[in-house]
Length: 84
Image (cartoon, rainbow, N blue to C red; front, side, top):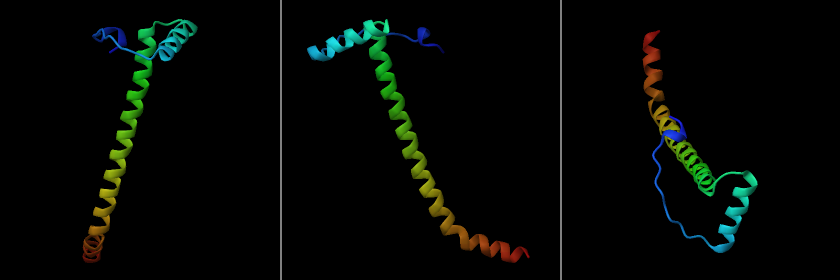
């Protein structure tokens, strides 16, 4: 689904003057609206957070899988010994 088809909610946000001035300059420099610039910046933060959580989850389950493999290695060896 494209960004244009997503619903939009208007917000009022207070920023320090220097940050608001920077936002205005960047929006002009990039030829985009302030809203798009803020949304893009927040989207980057969101993607980074989702990636961080995914890495954390993979590490957790990799550790858990490693512990399971270590715990079951003797049982697997026993089954393989009886298969001969």
